[in-house]
Image (tube, rainbow, N blue to C red; front, top):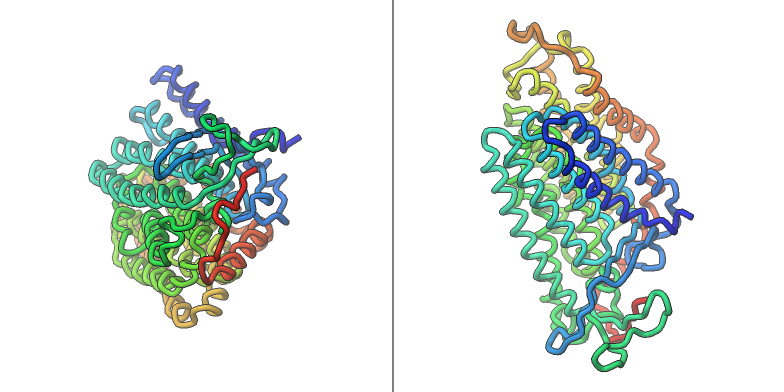
Length: 550
């Protein structure tokens, strides 16, 4: 029964239905605009839970079309032509494995919480929620897409609403931050587009009808012909590689260029040093809810895409360059931590902390073993929860004071005891305290990294010490000592704010004590990916045109 419901399409395009409803709501009906948005995101979260509960954790996915779940596929674009490209096939192709279902759960949960946090937006509310829901479509679609063309469309779709959400509803330097975000991301997208076209030219399959299982004939010649495809899974299939194409047959140099092109696009999103400078500005100027989505979801898309596309399509290059990926991961960890320590703006501190923590994702990915990659995926999920909670807590204080300076405060522990308790949970979770979720993921990253790159693992351990230093120092300056007189009237967290914070705190503690549900979701897919990468030391020899799509 569940398999017959297009759950992934519902998950992806439900926000479009919300946008259609909002279009007919008068702009002065703020409560209705908020209510519709929250209802849509909660329904989306419920659908994600249904997917999770019906997900078979024993199926690997990764590069095996038969083990993806909730698959939806039909013909979208067919071009029969002549010339260097010839016939082209683009499919509406969606499906989930352990890598993507984890990100779907993260995205829907963060989006639902961010929709409630968006109640603090009081200017042009209708436009804000329209852009918010459009952003939601792009995020979910990116994690569901198995056709590279669709992936690219959803990836680009996120760019427009995020630009306006920062540029219109952001802080004093919002135009600068939005433009910087747009240019960085667009640059990566252009490079990704070129590699995607090259990969499609290098991948060719014979198409079969999914209904009749008969060969699809060329409408001009009425003969079976080969089609260039954008299917990610066929791009991972050696049998589908076109002999003498740009990414096969011309030597490994072009394979390196293809890998590095994709990696560059996704490194910007992580963000990896030295492509990180857009993030602190975007975080500082973005509204609280958008900062939550930036840190909680958008950064994770970079790590997910590296695993799905860079490692899936160019496994031998990933194997060859893993040492350098680990190196950049360690640079992120140490550099981000030192930058965070130097900040006097609370929000900018958390932004640099995110850069540091995403370095652990790179280090885990580069380990090329199950423990490290498992730690990287857990790190993406757990950091998404913790960073979302931290940015929400910054927003609570900013809404009351219009200030974020660490040195502007002091003695807040007695004035705002509930707020203090929540920020202690978030900060101690961020520094990797045992019993909190991030401890588990960082432990797996270090276990994996120590097996592969002992030197980088030892250096990266300094990042944990630095993280504890800047968070404890911030806690001491803001919450202990004498309370300035001007803050005597500060109120503690409200029920609405607790609604956004308590679920995150609960998940952080629960996964710190028992991470089993996340481990079960990802284990089979991670093991398959590790096996796949290690089995591809060189480009395999194939028979031209041997692949078939059913």
